[in-house]
Length: 144
Ligand SMILES: Nc1nc2c([nH]c(=O)n2[C@@H]2O[C@H](COP(=O)(O)OP(=O)(O)OP(=O)(O)O)[C@@H](O)[C@H]2O)c(=O)[nH]1
Image (cartoon, rainbow, N blue to C red; front, side, top):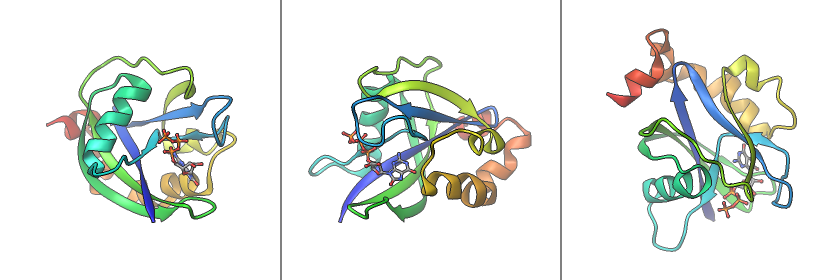
């Protein structure tokens, strides 16, 4: 089955989410940014490329923290923690309508969202040691 990577990018206790642009599948949905692997590409390579293409954001992939099927099950989603390496974003309008840095409780209020995204913020993220350490700002922890 094909794989798409989802980037969990944390800064100062908040996670970067994007709203998918009009004209692409699942338009309007809020989710951490994602992208499909090209042929022969590794997951970290795809993560770096997609964040550059969609957000002009340099990231350092850290580790895969969760896997789940996409809705419709054509893809498997591999969720990766990634450290932001640049401080600015420049979203590609063809793919991204809006960006926001959110805490889990704020993500829960965004609509529409995918089942996988809600599960990630409610159940997976709070259990990650990197996230539990976020009382010291998580961004700085991840960037060390
Ligand atoms: N980002 C994201 N995508 C999800 C979630 N759940 C889910 O079923 N999907 C689906 O999984 C697929 C993710 O692939 P993708 O992000 O590469 O899709 P895309 O259309 O942007 O493709 P591309 O950027 O590689 O061209 C999409 O079809 C999306 O609808 C989720 O929680 N987050």
